[in-house]
Amino acid sequence: MTTTTTPREARNGVDVPTLFATLDAVKETPEIAAFQFRARNRWVSGTHSISTIRGFSGALQEDTSRTKDFVYDADHPVVLVGTGHGPTPVEFLLHAIAACLTAGVANIAAARGITLHEVTSTVEGDIDLRGVLGLSGEVRNGYSAIRVHLDVAGDASDEQLRAVVEQSRRRSAVYDVLTNGVPVHVDVATT
Image 1 (cartoon, rainbow, N blue to C red):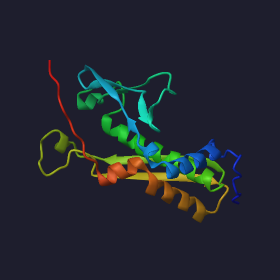
Image 2 (image 1 turned 90 degrees about the vertical axis):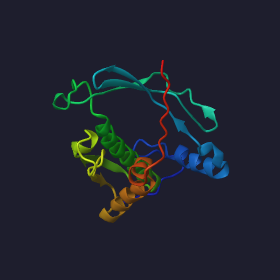
Image 3 (image 1 turned 60 degrees about the vertical axis):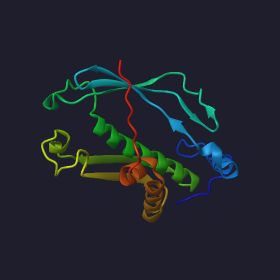
């Protein structure tokens, strides 16, 4: 059963009034939609590195709401000459698509007045390491396929829940980057 969300109501942990206020603000002043997210990374040893994420700019200002760094280790497993201190960089992509789709499902369901009970996903990525290891010019370096399976339970019909997931897919920034690509510029400073 779907109910209508009133302007003062929160649903699925989503502040629905703020969500709609944000949409209205961006419609009125599109330049506030320009955001720049940043991450810093420091090599530790071997294939182990640590990324730190905190600052970003958006809504025409530098954000100060985050009071601590988010710190993530990345490494390769021992079988790939690493020490297993964290997921591989390509595994972070799987996390990113799952987290982006899940956040979209929560927001869209809330906006549509649907109460969610559970959202889980399993993401698989197929990769042939001959590409990244430079052993084959015929094999790409990255994933050849990614599959996402979502299980969604909520107070709505099967059709409505599927429509929420489809809208999340259509609006997912990570899905867009993975399926359409984006220019990546690399520059180097040496000392």
